[in-house]
Amino acid sequence: MKSATTNPSRLSNYLLAIRPKTLPASVSPVLLGTAAVPLDSINWLLALCALGCALFLQIAVNLANDFFDARSGVDSEQRLGPTRVTHAGLVSETQVIVALSLSLIIASICGLVLVAYSGPLLLAIGLLAILATFAYSGGPFPLASHGLGEITVLVFFGWVAVMGSYYIQTHHFSWHVFALANALGMILAAIMLINNIRDIPSDAAAGKKTLAVYLGATRSRKLFAILMILLPIFHCLAFLFSATPNIPGILLPLIITIPLSIQVCRELSQSEGRMLNSLLAKTAQLSLIYGAATSASLVFI
Picture 1 (cartoon, rainbow, N blue to C red):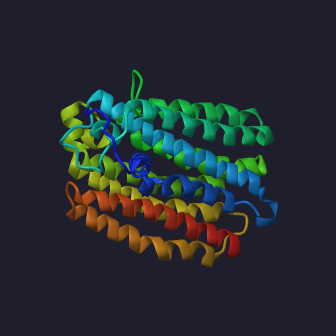
Picture 2 (cartoon, rainbow, N blue to C red):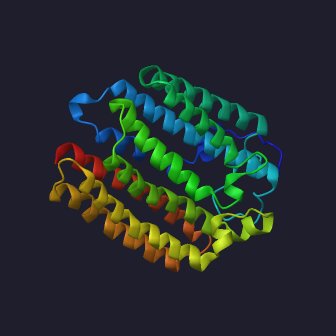
Picture 3 (cartoon, rainbow, N blue to C red):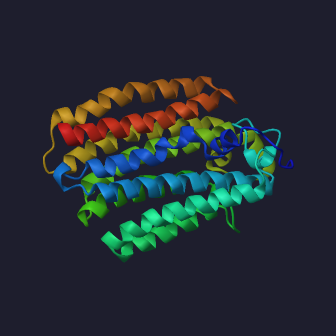
């Protein structure tokens, strides 16, 4: 790990650390969960707080990952992904911890507003989310280093974020929304999977056993294709669970997202190494496109 250096563009270094291209993964679930609520019943303050909570928790996860991977030696000169600021010495460890702490404070403030409206269940879920922020890359059993990165993303950014955004508005559970959470969760898990496929050589060398390291590149690519196949299946199930299913509402998001998911699968089969960086960004964009298209179908169709 290099020592911190003076850089005139400190803001750009922090932007590099929070990984803006991955942030659609926290916006899409809140958008989708909120759109499942009748428009005239939405409390926009709660929706905004849910978005702030999800967004700053993801920023905290990204900063924690940057910090812990530098400390553990996972980040090295072999790394093919974007520059990690702690390892590169662009931002000091202390500065990363301060930024991480500020992100958690903002997320916690937003979360406490949600707890005040929705009760202690949200408090328990929020505490688990904060614990997962550190457990993902750090602690005695880093989840990302034991093949659990994708399932962690599915649980917290799929199930918890989508269902949580819906629950704070309605105070009840919905199979319809749970199926939507799984549909979006397939894309979010796929984002993590592409990241881990790219990093197989460096992760394996550092002893970080991600799911992609366990499966190998070929089977990981097959798993990615399976996730893309499950996306429309869960989507259709969601609308079957809906009290008022309608064909246009089912078809619109699929017409938009299926061609994009096929394109991403094709590119993945032909991409290696640093070429996967742009594909990771495209998959993150796919999550936002699916979330926006499905939200639009829920609200307007």
